[in-house]
Length: 88
Image (cartoon, rainbow, N blue to C red; front, side, top):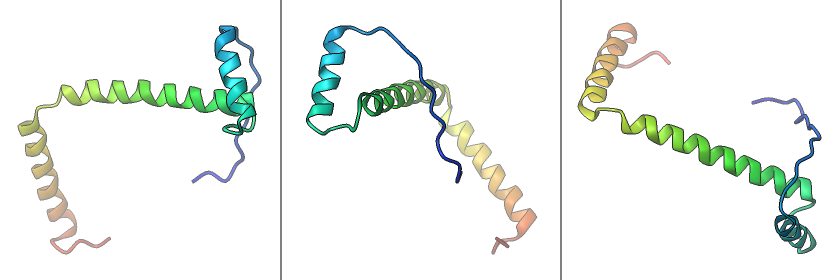
């Protein structure tokens, strides 16, 4: 786990006024400490959602029987390398 503090970068963007008003309302209600905090969380959620879609698309390509065969082969290789009891 990293012990370095998060680096922040300032950037500007143009968004519909209604969105800014909604963010300001959340900040005023104490849901977020600032506009920046609200927008940072929204960006993080959007990026996670995007990554989840990519992972789901890749997972849909998997063939369960083939994956199980490869996992079984890996377990055999593991057993031959470290023994039944393991050494870790």
